[in-house]
Length: 421
Image 1 (cartoon, helix red, strand yellow):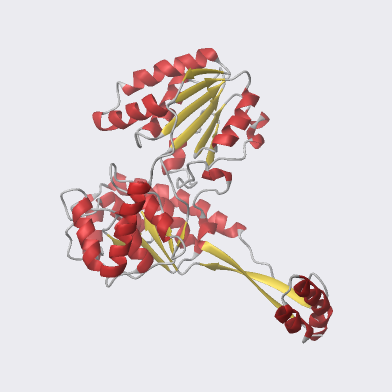
Image 2 (cartoon, rainbow, N blue to C red):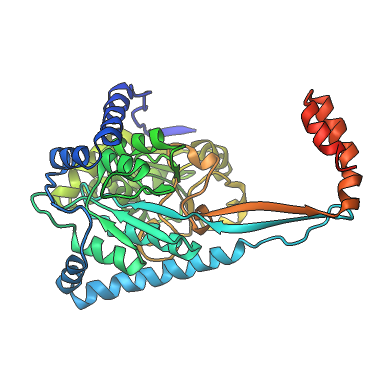
């Protein structure tokens, strides 16, 4: 194995300042409610709205501001995302009257959470695609109250119109122009103008991520997300310009985003290195800064002795996005087990999943793919068990239960079982 381009090693960041700042915001929102929410929205987002909730009139104006093509594009993307989310819902089925022994009936129910907040970031770019990705599976799961929020456009009291339309198309029941750690706190604990929710999903900056971490328990969350990641496994037949484009597509998200190429072809690796530099020259200025910083600090190209060597490396990294740009992906596909979403073959750009193919783009980062997948319809569902027993069934299992309870020293448990003999 040889390193063609080495990345800067991430060090364990001292999160103390962020942790303390977020903790203070959460406590302030808990204590002062809307007053604190207004203070922080004004301070961080220049948001001085009288009402945080978006009105029907604002939604209508947002629709009117879009071109026919923009609206058609949002509807087309939503249709694919909705279709796949509905198919996912169908795979979560209930068990009725399962009988491990005579007289004992076990079942479960699949119950949607009562309410959720879909947090749609909008700092550097208006990420209206995230509105479709978060709200749609929540609605398909049957969540009764789906709330969404996003920041206002800097210097205005308006939300980005595409983001607002995407939220409405996806089916949001309530929409609020709030963001940041203060928004997470408000929807976790509630204020005079905001009813709390049961669950919060969606990406955000380090303050939003830390707020979700600190509010977990008060509300459920999807996961704590970090900077975007892509890992590409490619052989000699892959196109260098395609790989460069896919690496930079993630790099432009954030200076801390990470792009990695694993290849068994020295020629390809060095061609990609040049192709990245060529494409950086044509990116617009607002995209170039993030992409160049990300690639400079965290871009990596590794030359492998064989493609098989990519499997343990990728499984250890557990990337958010995994691309297999190889001639025979079937030969190694099933060996990859830790990833947020996989994109197979040179035709399958990761950005298709970001926007319109139908799978969800809200995915685990920072090696969380070792233990969770991305946002999906089932994330908004609870599988809750119930059981019933006949008198004979209770009598038959009571002695076993009592012995197990007494073995743990829990006599009260044992007595409760004995009374059913």
